[in-house]
Length: 319
View 1 (cartoon, rainbow, N blue to C red):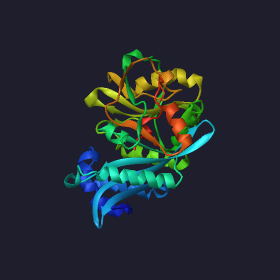
View 2: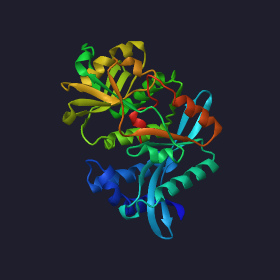
View 3: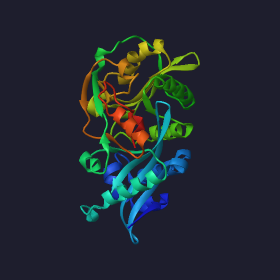
View 4: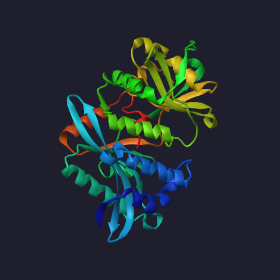
C-alpha cells in the first residue's frame, strides 16, 4: 500500500462524488466540486493544502485532506498538519485502511519535522485516540439574545475592504492568549474564501457585521442567522479595545435580530470573558483532537488539555 498525493482534478473526480453525502451540505454537486477546486487553487491551497489517498496498487481505498497551520505557544512556533475529510468507500470499510493511512501520515509528518497533527472528529473520537490523538476542550455556548445589552449602535455588513480591519481586531484580541493558531495573510485569504463559500453551515444566512469607528473597524462578528434553529450562530468575533468590547453584546444582538438565541463554539481566552455566562456543554461533533510529534508539542498539548473556562480555537479554524 502507498500513500500518494492526489491532484485536485483527480480528487474531484474520484472522491467528491462518494463523499458528497457527508460533506456537501446544502451545496449541489457542481458547487461542491467548484468550491473544493477553488480552495486548492488559492494561495493558501497551493502552499498549505493537499489531498492524499491510500492506494493498493492502482486502487484508491481511502483518502483525506491535509492542511498546514502553525501554533504559537510561549516563545515557540509549532508546525502542525491538519487532517480533514477522512474517507473510506463503503465497500472497503472495516479493514483498517483508514488507520493504516493515518499512521503512515503521522510517520511521514514526524520525519518531515512537523510538531503535531490535529483534526476535528465528528464520530468515534476513540478511533483517533487509538492512533495517539488527545481530545482537547470542545464546547458550545448558548445565550438568550434578550440577556445582551440592547444599546443603540450603528452596524454595517462586512465588505471586502473591511477585512484588513477585521484582521487588526483579531490580532489585538489574540495577543494575550497563552496559545493560538497563527494567521498569516494566506490563512486569512483561506478564511475569507471559506466565509464566502458558506460551506461550514448546513443552514442559515451569512450575517457578518462590523462596528465602525471613523474609517477603522472597532469590532466584528462572523456568523449566520439560522431561522431553523431560531439562533444566530457565531463563527468568530473580535474587538479593537475596551471601548469596543463594551459594545460587543449590542453587536451580537444586532446580528441575532429577532432570533431568540445566540450560539456557537465556546470562544478562546480573551474573547470568552466578553460574553455572559450562558449555557455551556460539550460538543457532540467537531471534537478538537491533536497528537504530538515532538517533545515541544507534547508540552503544549499537556497545557492545552488542562481544564479552562475557555476553549482553544475558533470555529473558523475548523477543517
